[in-house]
Structure formats: structure tokens, C-alpha cells
Length: 65
Image (tube, rainbow, N blue to C red; front, side, top):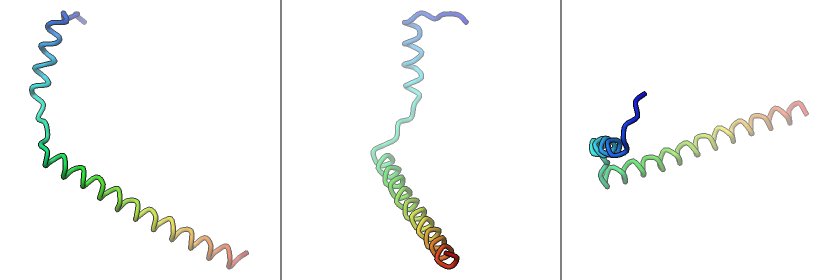
């Protein structure tokens, strides 16, 4: 693999960074809110599943214990 000189590397890097489409403030805010909403929904779901499994196991253990 051929070595490129540092100046050429920096030029290529700047050209690639210029192609990046950065999200706007509104898009960042909306996606952040969606991440928090999904995290809360997942926590509620897994908490409920955990509670149901625990209740079922306690029912089984008290019935046969």
C-alpha cells in the first residue's frame, strides 16, 4: 500500500468531512426524545414481564412448597 503525504491526507480528510450531512437542531431534539421514550417503554415492558414471571414462580412454589 502506497504512503500518501500528510498534506494530501489532510486534504482528502477535509473533502470527506465536507460531504457529511449534519442533522439540524430539530432533528437531534426529536431523535433524542424518541430514544428516551423508547427506553422508558422498554423499561416498563421488561419490568412488567419480570413481575409476571415472579408472580407465576411464587404461585408455583407456594402451591408445591
